[in-house]
Each structure stands twice: as structure tokens, then as C-alpha cells.
Length: 316
Image 1 (cartoon, one colour):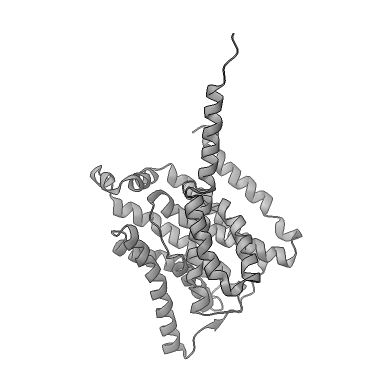
Image 2: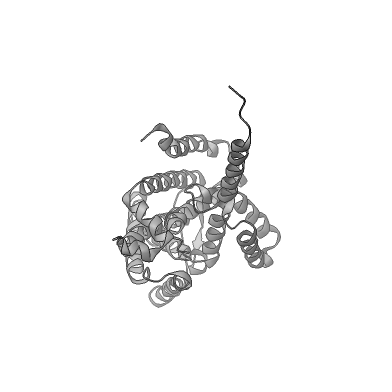
């Protein structure tokens, strides 16, 4: 591999080194906004890890995020924090494996509907379980983790996801996923085990989402299923990833930053109309920016290259 092949990992590590000291100088409001941006950046990048190359649109983000949050709520005061995160990751991986093996034979709108239903199913099961065995729905989260600590953990996880995606893209698994995204039937006839390939990356993606939920849980003093498994999370992640462009590993981050700030403003000023505005933003992005910001960048590069080729060269 040449130095150019290592551009993305080097840029990721350099950006992380620049962003790491921000909590030292940021005030409380900016700290909260930075944590929010990093949460969605991590979720959207994890989403694109699977959905980007395969073109499978998943709305299960809230299901795995909520599982991680509830794992922290249940075990955060019983186990050392260093153990809770691996336990949350293990739970997410097991659930994702079961879900993947049973549903990734579906495709298109059927897969979208199932993943949306999965989030609602998990929410209802958690609600029923708490009411049945706990006597109440919801629980307090008294875990001593600062906003700065959450920020650094999210930043570290984002770096891990980006580097993992870089490694997958350059592996046989990455080649298989791209083939599946182009034409799954042809990929199957070419000898690719499409089910194993899809399940493997789906598990990695879902596990990362679960860990994000576990990291974010201490930010709330109280959580219940309507908070942890809020379907708005799934739709926001989808919209952010589409705006940035899921075709590139870094694409979702380009969509997260402007939309996280926009959604913060909309929620503060138009709380009752937020769902409607969220839907409108989705329609605008799909209609006007179908390939995302990454697609616009690629179009710009292509236009510049065409102009350069047409430019007459000076006679030697």
C-alpha cells in the first residue's frame, strides 16, 4: 500500500488529535452540542458501515441504541463501567446476529419495514418487562460520568469505527459487500456467501450503535422506553447519512454537523412541529441532494477534470 492509501486513517487520527482537547475550553452549552454532534456522527457512520455498500436501508438504529442505554441503566451501578460497555457490546452483537440471520434474506421495502418494526417491538418488550417484573416503567441512572468523559469515549469509538470501515473496505468482505450493493443475485452466482457477508457487517454496525447507547445513558438522569427507543433517532441518523452521502466512509459526518445544529435550533424554537419539519427535510434531501454532499463533491471534481482536459496545452 502506498502513502496515498493511508490518507484516510492519517486524516482520522489527526482530526481526533485536534478535537480531543475541545472539552477543556468549551463551555457547558457548546459541550452539550459537541456531545450531540459526536453521538449522531458515531451512529450515522456505524449505519453507513452496513447500509452504505449494501444499499440496505435500516431503521433499527433506535433498537440497538436503546438496548445499550438500558444495559447501562440496569448494570451501571452493579458492575464496573469498564465491564458494562463490553457487556452492552455482547448483547448488541447477539441480538444483531439473531436479527440478521432471520431477516437479511429480505431486501428493499420489506427490510425497511421489518427494521422499523423491530425497534417498536423491542420498545414494547422492554415496557412490558419493566411493568411486569419491576412494577414501574423507566428508571433513574445515577452514574458518575461527566460530559467530557462521554465526549472522549464517543470520539474514541468514532475513530475505531472509521478505522474498522477502512479495513473492511480493503478486504475481501468489502469487495463482497460492494458486489451485493451492485447486484445481489449476480454476487450470489459469483460464489459470494451473501448472507454471511451481510450478517457479519450488520453485527459490527449494530454492536457499535449499542455501545453508543451505553455511553450516552449517563447523560440522562432518567430514561424510559420512549426516550431510549425513540424512533426519531433512527430517522435522524438516516437523514444525516443521506445528506452527507453513505457512499463514502466519511460522508455521514458531513451531513451530521449541519443537521445536528439545524435540528437543535428547530427543537428549541418549533418543538410541536419538529416531526413535520424532520419529514420535510428528508424530502428535500432525497429530491435535491440524492447522492449527498459527497456526490456534489464528486461532481465538482469531475467538472474540474473535464475542463482541465479541454484546456489546450502550450506547444513544446
